[in-house]
Length: 125
Image 1: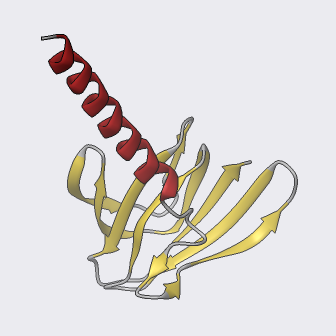
Image 2: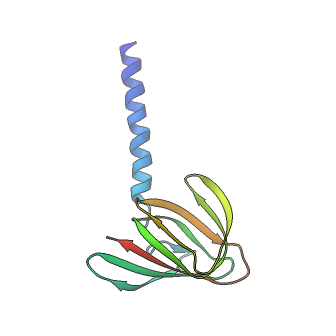
């Protein structure tokens, strides 16, 4: 019985380590792209912040990646299929929409609309 408990604990720890390793091994939004092409570019960077401008034409997405705590602003809205840790949903993002996250997050997106969508992402370092 004692060996079964140890085996279970070790298996559980292994699963947690794999989960953490996957999250830690994800690229950041600048490294992630779409089918080998970059979708974000740095428009400002200093010791505290990095500001990215990310552009998604219809049918273009952003492969699975992680974000540091950040603030986002929609320069040009669009319709996206978003997959994150809660599942997959389709959302229409209006121009001028803002959001912020105070922890590391991960997701992947695909522009399923018929217009190009553009975002500013302000990341804390």
